[in-house]
Image 1 (cartoon, one colour):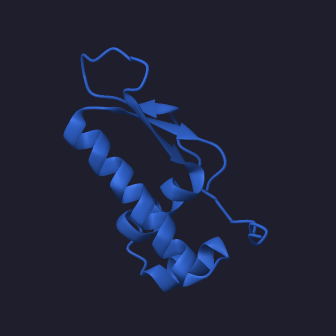
Image 2 (image 1 turned 180 degrees about the vertical axis):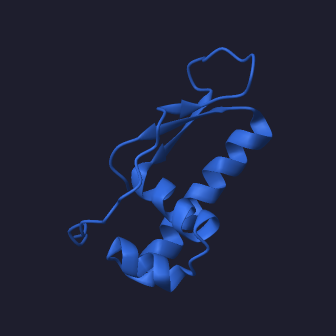
Length: 94
């Protein structure tokens, strides 16, 4: 039986719903969903320059949780960039 998911503090709200390669039409299966907690971890660590412990404190979760969220986000972003997929921003998280 899994543990109940702890509520994560997410302050950043993107100004758009997706990010896609120029000149590419959306096709079914050609998008990567980036959840709000994943985007928040990318913002805090890569944009704001916090370490994982600082990001964990801001998000009110453990450092290990932030590490897992951050790793997932980076894998999705790399997949989208390398394969030319659209990145769709979604509410919720894993």
